[in-house]
Length: 419
Image 1 (spheres, rainbow, N blue to C red):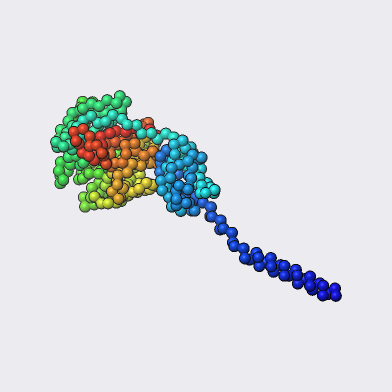
Image 2: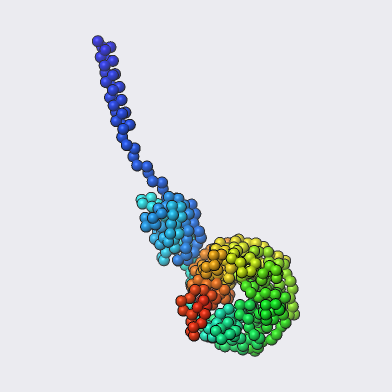
């Protein structure tokens, strides 16, 4: 009897367990938890307010209205996004710190800080007071900027002006003594004097004219061996000027020359090794020259990111860290103290752009700074300084062509940059 009772109780227990298991197996599965957002990288790693930053990661919401991005706690504006990428702008009031991305109730935080540059200011200076013209040529002597020799509605003009950075005063100077060919000239300064090299025609050697800032007089100095002066960079190191590269491949695109103003002589130096031999940007820092970006050949829809340092003591070119922005041509470069700056230009798609970048030669690194204050443009003019840099003029997309119905793609403004 006891044995039968035990068997009966076991049967009831097994039945109950089977029923419970059956009930459990019939319950619908719970919702699959959403994967958490992840930040793997962002670029650039520093910049001023309004800098565009691209955040790379995973599990973002493609509906950007449901994503929240913050720079060290300050909410940013999201421009566009996908599940793996968000494009945002650095918000006003942001400070250096982590970037966070919140999706629903989950938040991802970057492992690296984003550095907010608190200086980086562009200030509009006095507009050019002369005739409204395009494709001007310029150079700089100390705190004075010289510019003119442009193309106007009434023809090519020898008109030439001086701008005193310290006083903010424009003064008209002696006209250029030859017939200017706007867009086919280059200017530089050595030893307190300015020089203009400008092609007299499409086949001849470009003529050199020296401008004495003290006497306001021009002097003919012969000819340059660099055939083409379109899109040619120049920089000055110590008591010498360096001109090139420039022109199409068939006419010596990579050729690079040193000019000695005391002897009025030219010396061919090591050819520029980069791909962007036409319309690159250039500046000098200390005893080195720097050349980068540009297009390959001539009138080619390309944009280089290559960047090189030239050492005159050894006559050698050294490739440095590539320019991190879009490949481009017709950009400008200037130096402030021990740093170089490069920006604006035309990208490989043919669009004018306005981003600006700082180069640190000690670290061989780039950081993005505040976009050029004058908007998108290419073929601008630039000037260096100990505390400030200057950029302006050039061509872009204007709604107003200026006084007298001037060229609708031409700017006549000058901007000062303070790091």
